[in-house]
Length: 444
Image 1 (cartoon, rainbow, N blue to C red):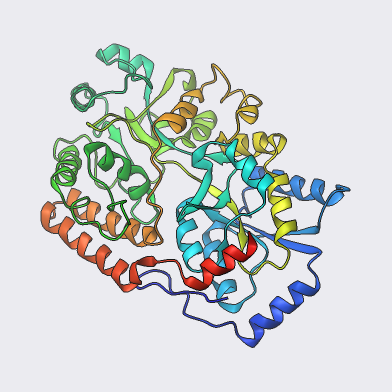
Image 2: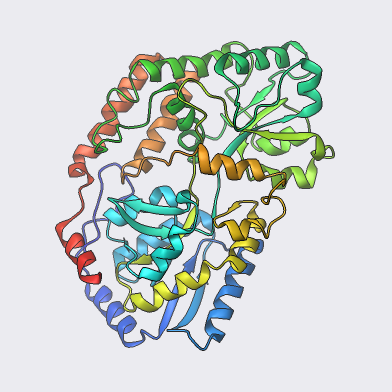
């Protein structure tokens, strides 16, 4: 296997498999009836308990094709562990991968597409946003999806004469600006709107603010070929979006600092309107005494519809797995509704299948989280399916944070485009390798 490198991204190094890697492969082949599964859930007791049950049930099944061995890592160090293993040729058969990383891991020859017909058929029964794709092939499936929304208190909206936005009638840009003005004028909060501007080190800016840019009519990259961000990230619509973001600061609606825990601040009424991930509902359940007053709404339509992000952690097949048939059999087993429901509920995420959603009251008909099911079905636009996404995400966060803190808008966007385009060119356009394509065909 060839592990590929990308300019400006996490460097894997262009490595032909070393003697150590060959030995690891030989050992894996000799013991192909045991499959190792790596999980990022160490410390996440709720979801990990379900994964452990899946492994236990599969190993007890008379139809198992191999024995599963589970190894867990903290999420903070998980990607580094996978990259190190890929470089050294010691990857396990099955790995977790966060959905936006799928294209990069596929391009870098860490993971390989699914080929088992029954597994792919199961994927067709799930929310489209629960699959990870690159170049038209499926590399990962998830038990759940996650997206974002606006959160407010019904009593506050009613008092200020602000209507509750719905999936069919999200706020327009002017309605949102009117709502923000009313919240500010009420004098109850210094900064009435919280949208996570303090989170510049994670993927939040691209995940949360990218869809707002898209609703304005711009994007993080030209999705026709994914070869340049020019015209999308620095065009007229992107400038309008950036000016709108800066205006939020200038009008005192948001602060550039922001809260370290936006959900907790909202639960404690330190903001009147929150834009955040649906997972904050778990925080509300713990800390919001008036949770019955909290309403979830879709994000605003800024001209091109209400757009939200989608995709979450998925399970994938490593390129070096010696028993791909058994690994895919286990992956399909793990996607059963009876596991999908509890693992989704544990993290307050959207179960990927209709049957699993019916098992979780919050996401079934009339449930408090049902609106997120509709957002996922109708409003989700996936993050750019390109190996350059990680670089784009970091560049976008830095650029937008500079802009809301006063940097020149057009110059900042042009600079970001130059950096992104340079990264893509430095990686030869992130084209799939001929070797990888040939290997994928051999598996079919």
